[in-house]
Length: 510
Image (tube, rainbow, N blue to C red; front, side):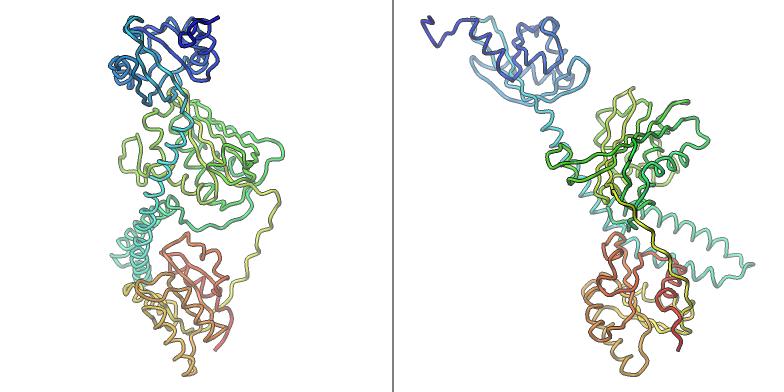
């Protein structure tokens, strides 16, 4: 019988410590482990004998040794403090633990103790949320900058196109104009990368054979390189639902990084498998329940240091010398944005000297989908009359010059109210507009969608196009829902505008 229930015998204490799920470690003032319960052995991956021969410095992450030992040693009698520290398992992996540090009474000769609770999963979720918030903020800023820059590029590219059409082959300025045009096109491609990162790149969704997409990307990246690519997929692999061009960009960007990290004669493995995410699946914090194709792209490089692993999706982050390469450090940022746009997920695991694996989850579709048959090219009416609405004066001037170059008559409007007034006046005079081009957003005025709604009440047969620098706005795919016959992203080439007008106006004659 226990005489004093407040002072249980050692065997009762031992049974208690063995039964609790939290790790318990006692150690001396010099840091030698004196006792560890089974939960501590499981948490840190040591046998009891190995753990009790260890020094606590060997268990802690090097950066957390000072604060952990100092907190423990400075505690007064029977006092306790809590903090979060990193520990190292026997296999070298790092875990986060909530640590309660305490000291024993003096009669225990300065014995110290820790109670550890594994919070690695919680810290990973917190880090993931913070990283997503950071990327969301940066992508919002990038998307806004890209939209404004697109308007500027529209003016530059449009005018350069016009100048080039007016140059004779022998003009000495023609090479300069073409050089400037090439630079502007490169700038447009860079803006496209920002739009991809900001999840504002326009999509053309269709059904894609996943394994063929991976094999094609490997051929593009690894052809003629001293690195071997291997693609393996399970039988009955589902197809992808997405934009083939954008998803090809994702795989190429990832494979380019893998190739750069691989040693000569190295191997890059691409494995594909079907995954069904249920509401109970751990991936539900990143993905909606549904069917997905999982891609694992693994290289044999040196790996990514842990201290920079959470920065790899940051725009322009790169460990390589920048040199003269344009867009360096945007590859994984672009991949992240495109994957997010498609409703997927991208994650990276890496071990120094152990290679890197990039994992993608992309939405799958179980049924096939036929491709649309392109409509035959038609001729436009001679001297068609076109109304262009844009709040940027230079873009209105550009529209007038482009339409004149294409052989059309053009009038412009600053906002929706002015566009509707001009459209009504033209109808009343018996000289209606053949087509209307509306900017999606107008500062301080009526934009394209409400303007179109009112035009339809004036003329149910109005032919109209929406155009915008927000190249991922859903209206670019769903323009017909608002009554438009076409959509055009900015900046546009003269040929793109000409093709769109020709398609919409068709063979109507005046």
